[in-house]
Image (tube, rainbow, N blue to C red; front, side):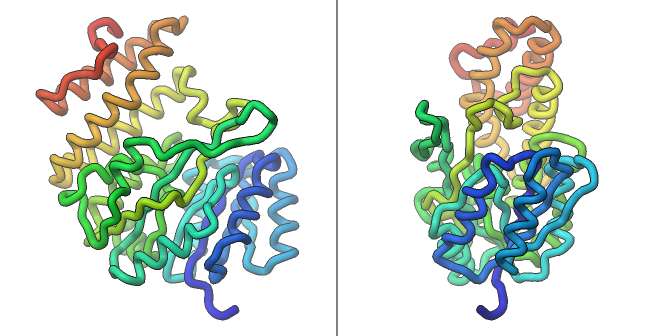
Length: 314
């Protein structure tokens, strides 16, 4: 097949029920010059065995097993340490790449010479019949990735800061190493801060409006983004949001910081407030109220969205 162009890092923890679809989405790519590093993060189900079986059947799959659970950030970093190809991307083992994802993102980089390319994504939600159905591109995702742009910057396109997920991007491996990019370990929502570091460190990046990934909302509500009603998860989430804004502010990108604050106010705070209204722990409301006030302080003149009252949360 020749030399691989890209390594796709696929971390997984207890995802045996979903990973066949994820790996099939790699096999179905219109561009086949890839390698996948499968990182089993100490799974207790059949994830590790299924990874091993995939590697036995296809030499493009390579497996690493963590002896114990170390977290998604550590699993991704394990994969990053093994990348030898010019390009790198990510796919969580419960998500799905669309068939032309690699072709589209790599093609953009080939034309532009940019440091990375970012595409749109949609939610993959339970369909009520035992399966999953892909939704529509949400407005904030479209704002980040449409219309198509080549060799843009975060100052020229501040709304790109709203696309913070690792698996919507293909990057030059040299860019990660030049910028010293690593995922934080021991915390949740580790891609928030990494994404903002990518935007601020890049000489240029590309955006494409094509849907490149389906992000699964698990029917059993076991994914991290479905556990924001718990106080520890909320705290990690708010810390990650704040840290991402910090990156934009401290590196001198005020327009992007304001765009990020506005999006968090409009999209993230509202559902969290609904949880807080009936949450049994006052500490949940206090944490969310303090965060809401900090957002208002960061971006004077940007009001809280309707229904979000920092005073009421306190």
